[in-house]
Image 1 (cartoon, each protein chain N blue to C red):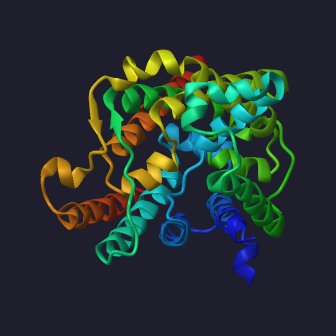
Image 2 (image 1 turned 135 degrees about the horizontal axis):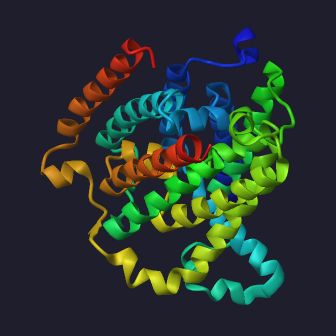
Length: 179
Length: 172
């Protein structure tokens, strides 16, 4: 029974996450496309307020020694090229791997029939190509598990405090511009 | 509890809610919010149905075993969370073609499904290539101040904005 607890927590956290995404409207194609057309800034508002809230909390817990963070290693070949491919698909589909789960729960059949099949197919294709990619393009411009504080050789809070202020300011300007 | 029945909440309430949720996933499960690895595991599980256990020998599935894990349950939970939210507010409905797509490209279902499939393939390849998606990199990675995640998140939106312009401004 005890070994199943992590899975139960995963499911419960997922329910909260999906509930919030649906309330935020980002399970909807129109909201995602509105963001990518720079007409509706709901996605950016949700993401940036989540990042500020999360960033302060998890780094406080890290400072207290309660948790250990796990920033992903990366490379230019991995993150820039993969990110751009992802972006093209993001606009064609109008859902991302997270919001598509919410979109399916919302009853959107283009997400279930078209999008989900595509993501599974794409993931399988990547797994097949992985042996050829991992030694070449994925290694290009490797920087390891680098974080912004380590890049600038400063403490975490020297980045967190100005970044939080910058994000809040950006959100304020978005509201003032009526976006 | 009428607020649970509201169709939409302020994006800031939702964002702060997701931020607080991430504190608890770290504290209780020691994990960040993320989704796209689960689709790779699922692809492996489906492949196993057809090709048997030798699928597990593939280098990618050695790194990401095709099994149900914490994040897979998270993604499953998201389906039910969104279902609960949309049923409570009356926002749930079966829909093949979204309004904004229909306004630009018509209400034809096959063309929408074909583009969704193509988009999904690119999304799947891109998420595995970049080792994360809008949640794993875009929210969880950026809040950990990971350089990989900031580069990925910026590229998600650059690619997305370019393709959206191409679709809705150039083609439509």
